[in-house]
Length: 171
Image (cartoon, rainbow, N blue to C red):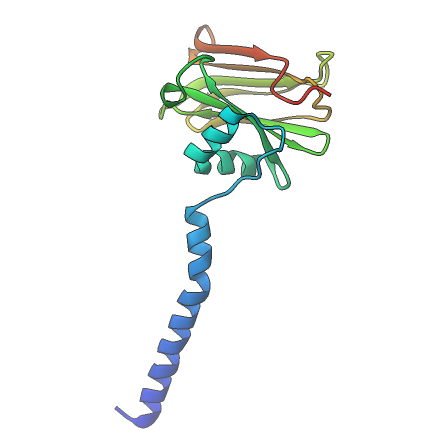
């Protein structure tokens, strides 16, 4: 091998190693996704975010930039968090809210997610058969925004039929 070929090969090897070293921190960060958690989040929300950071971060990403996790609710309500069929995530960004219902079943199911202003107007809905999540659905005024989350084998055969006025903070 000529001296110039050896120099080129060495330069390429150094460049490849430098590239790998520069991208390694990004790969490590991707393995441990993080989501901003609201100071108003309850202990169950914090626990669910710690147990499944990828789901909480993925849902926040779907909402858009700048959203903080406000509440995570295992569904059906009252279910042991490890046995949940879905997780309702609510995120806030200033005065705006975003909700996602994460499908924890692992198969496509009928899902419906609706968020409305406290007076029942300004509703945003996402309905259909989803294997990952329903949403994002948004509300421009989060104070006590009403949320409805449904999941089942069809719209007439539900195993989750959740409604709440308290998924977003009430001021």
